[in-house]
Amino acid sequence: MSDASLPEGLHMRPATLADVEQVVRLANSNEIEYLGEPDTSVDFLRHVWSLSSHKPEESARVVVTEDDEIIARVDTRHKRHMKIDLELDVYPAYRGQVELTLMRWVEERAQEHIALAPEDAQVLLGTWAHQRDMQRQQLWKSQGFELVRYFWNMKRELTQAPEQPRWAPGIRLYTFKELQDVALPGDETLTRAFFEAHEEAFSDHWGSIPGIYEEWREHYLSEDFDFSLFFLAMDGDQVAAYARCVNEGQQGGWVHTLGVRRAWRRKGLGLALLHHAFGEFYQRGTRIIRLGVDAQSLTGATQLYERAGMHVERRFANFEKVLRPGRDMRTLSLDQA
Image (cartoon, rainbow, N blue to C red):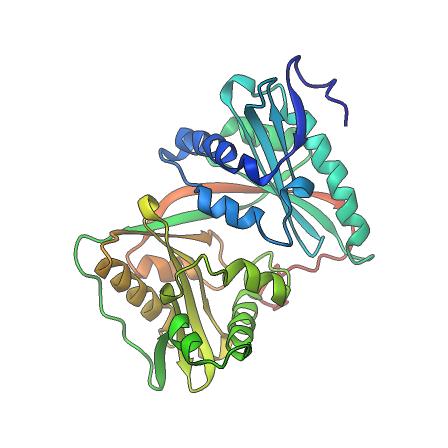
């Protein structure tokens, strides 16, 4: 794409792994503006950009000055080519000058995904904005996006040791590390069981698209993670529920995913896993725990988190744009799940 639409002295190029630190500084600048603190780590972005399914040279673009200083970026990720999610950040001094060029590239890139999506499937672009970021929300609306959903970040600050978990009869808790340590080398039975539990639990999540095992394993079971913070509630040899937690340093502890399989719901497993995770973080000296949730969760997750003592800290507006009409293959209601 020509740089003619950019101000003089700026040009757009593919992102590379060498850009990670600059891109994180840019993202953190935007996060501090609306969240009050940075929310993206170098380790996280390097992990994502190192995945075999996400090459920055293909999926991301940066706008740079003549000195190769990054002043804007857009990053895209796809779910089976049917949903392309984008992240866009621009330093304040350049806002209103580079976004349209970046979005034209996104739409061009999306055409490649459309060609690879199932021929009868709807293809969407998705993005988000902080609830108070009216400038960003107006950009999305001007680009043909519609507001479809709100998501929350919820938080609990531990001032004392949290409640003890109460487990349903027959349930035993293990860490993924404990189970992995006793597995035979090369045996993927455990990881596949974990994946299948995740897929079943999240098939009731609004917007869910079935995942691909190899991509899930690479992204969520990378050696970068501390598997002693991945908790599996087992009923015999069945994964009944799980919590995948990560210590994010200054950002505190995160419960990145919490899932309970259908046959084990309404037994208190979700609350027990949260209390256990809180206790583990507390013992490690972490006092702030966060998680993200659909504000209109189909399974009532928001009420569970409130019972666990969490409160809404941040609100985000999610936007979508239909690129190609067709059959919507996502979960939109529990009747579909």
